[in-house]
Image 1 (cartoon, chains in turn purple, cyan):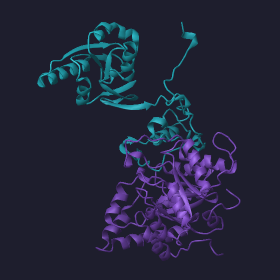
Image 2 (spheres, helix red, strand yellow; image 1 turned 30 degrees about the vertical axis):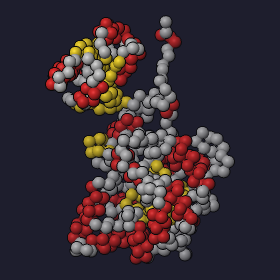
Image 3 (cartoon, chains in turn red, blue; image 1 turned 120 degrees about the vertical axis):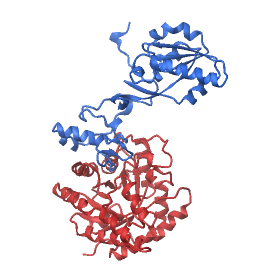
Length: 310
Length: 222
C-alpha cells in the first residue's frame, strides 16, 4: 500500500477511522444535474462516493465523467471500472486519464454480465479479469509501468479497491479469492450487500484466520430495503444476493405505510452489528435510487465522516 | 465436433427466394452427428421447401446431395456438376462448408442453412454443449480439464465471480458455473491449492481478431 495517502478515503482508513462510502449511479443520458443532485444529498455525510460503471450493464454516463462532476462539487469519488466493456488497452488508458483529472480511488470489478442489461446483444470483452486489472493498477502505481512494462510519464497513483461477495459459492474459495485480490493489489474491499449476517460473520472469521483482515480494509455493503417489491426483487432477481427469510418476514410483517421504515431499521441494526465485527473498517451504503436517504442513515447510525478521533 | 442448428425456415426461404433451382447440400460429418445437416435433414429440408413452394404457387426445383465432408475441396468436387447446374446452393454444412463451397466455386451463390453454434459434444440424447473456444492457446492443463474460457460466462481465469450460486451461473439457472466445475474437479484431484496462484492475463494473440489464421506444417507440404 502507498506510504503517503493518495486520497481522503485512504487517509481515513489508514488512520484507523470507520469509513463511510455511498454509491451513486450516473444517469441514462448526458444530464449532469442528476449527478449533482445526488452529490448534494451525499456531500458532507460520507468519506467517498462510488460512481458505478454502467451498472447492471445498462448504458449510462461514463463513470469518469460523473466522477469529475462530483469532484467539482468537493466530493471524493471512487471510480468503478469493469472489465466487461474495455480491453486492457482501453482500461489502462482510462485509468491514466482519470488520474490526470484528479481521480484517486478506483474500484476494480468484472462487471454484471451484459445479459442483465439494456443491450444484451452486445459482445462482452473480458480481455482481463478483475484480479488482473487490480494487478495492472498496482503495477502502474508502484512500479510506474504499464502492462507491457513500459515506463510511464506520470504513473497513476490510485488507492485501489476490489469487491467481494461473501454470499457466493463456494464459500471457501471466495476466501482464497479475497487473498488473491489482496495479493494483486487491493487496498480496500467493498462487499456485496449484507443481509445474511451469519454468513458474513463466517466469511469474516475465515478471512481473519488467513490473516487477510490485517492486510486490507473491509467495508461491508448495506442497502436499505424500501418496499416489499424491492425485497422480493433483491431476494430473487439480483445476482449474488442473499436475503434470508428472517429479513423477508420482517419486511412482510411491517404495517402498511411503515415498510420503508422497517427497511431502514434493519439497515441500522445491520450497521450496528457490522461495527462490532473485528476487521470491518467501514460501511458502503448502496441506497439504490434512494441517495437522499443516506444522510439520514449515517446520522441515525451515529457515523461521522472523516478520520476517527482517538 | 462442430455443432450447428438449422436456421428458421423463414430466414432460409428469404435467402433463396430469388432462385428457381437450388441444390441443398448436406455434410456427412459433424452436422450429421448433431442431426442438423446430414442426408436425412437434407431430405426433410427439400420436402419442406417443395411444399412451401407449392403452397405459395412458386415453381421451384430443389436438388439434394450430401458429401462426406463439405470442408474439404476434394469431396466438393464430387458434386461439382450438380453445383454448376443450379442457381444457388443452400448448404446444410457448418460455416466452414459454406466457405469451402464459395472458395472452390467462385461464381456460385451459396447460402447457409445452419447457424454454426459452437465446438462441443452431446451430453445427453438431444442435448449438445459447448466445450472449446478454439482460442489457440489451450489452458486446460491448468484448470483440471475444464475450460474457463468457454464455460465461464465472463471467461474469468482467477476464480468465480460473485454471481456463482448453488453451482449455477448468474445469467441462467440452466448454465452450470464453469468455476464451480473447475473447483469440484480440482478438489477431487487434491489440487485446490493451485487456485491460490494468480493466473496472468491470457495471451489472446493466437485466437480471433487477426484475420484468417493459418497453420503451416512444412514437414507435410508437397
